[in-house]
Amino acid sequence: MKVKIYTTPTCPYCEMAKQYFKSKNIDYEEVDVTSDIEAAREMIEKTGQMGVPVIEIGDTIIIGFNRAAIERALK
Image 1 (cartoon, rainbow, N blue to C red):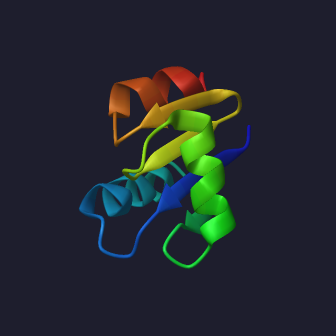
Image 2: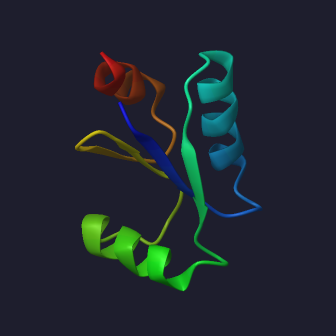
């Protein structure tokens, strides 16, 4: 299952999400929305949100680092 995380360099919850995926040996694609304006637009279009992290797991979008929601999406 494809995992994508929209992040910024100073976001502590983004770091928590990345550490969580690393601890579970889950590969993910990280997109820094501060350096990729097109990705930032894509994230906002998909979610209506400007905050990060935004985590895509397959067709599921999770806003923020919500461990329970992430675990449900991974099953």
